[in-house]
Image 1 (spheres, rainbow, N blue to C red):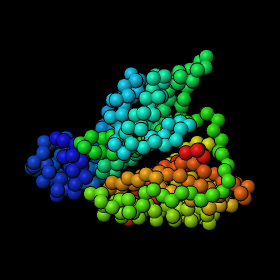
Image 2 (tube, one colour):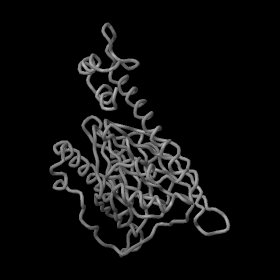
Image 3 (tube, rainbow, N blue to C red):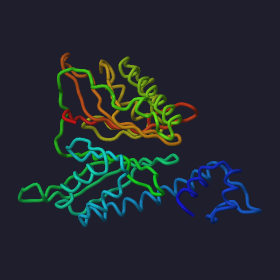
Image 4 (cartoon, helix red, strand yellow):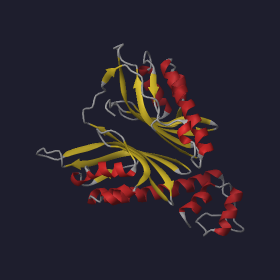
Length: 329
């Protein structure tokens, strides 16, 4: 059975799943004549297991290509419109640019290790968060430098294969304090409803983009108004939040506790959208943010952000949000 048939099978309603089962090779747990119809939770569990298997296989090949310095094979793991942010760098987009950047890193990097701490998926998108660690032998110092931190990776299913759609490496231990810059407005978002025109999934993407924009606007309004309950309600129960220079916060209640100390007089928060993708109940956005926070009335905090959002019961909420303090992004 092809990947496309498997996706249809896992995501289809029971009645459609039965029809697919008659024309496709049977799967373990698939409906067969005389068998029982699986409920939604069973289908979702099988779908998660399927996506995890595919993602793990992809990441295993990705680590092998990194270890051997095979830049061509490594680049093949990324989608054509992939976005990559390496530790201390600036985002690059497109498979060719990703390959060019990685070609300058992997010759002296050796083996890289990654782990998975958090995972979610919906139809053709999957999100993974975990740790990474590799040794940089190209620094020129007497001893190799270990680079470690967290990674947030978004996967997409295209052309019968899962690939990396966006990947953010978030370093720790590199002494990167928040940088304050003169207050200013962000440049207009390159991604707008007009840029989505002509896409074959245009209607769906426009609807998803509208939901994402509304969710982020409501969350920014709660932030600006020091509304802790409103800001916390914008996250899913199992959400993950990383603020500049801080450890990950997992779970809405932990996020709420941090917001209680952060939001008073936090100031306005601007965001622009530089990259966007959506499938099923999941959407991904990344771009630049500017926070009018801090004691200096003429300065603020600027950097890149990445967010994963889920639609639950008709409402869109933040599943994962990372704010990076990198003014030169």
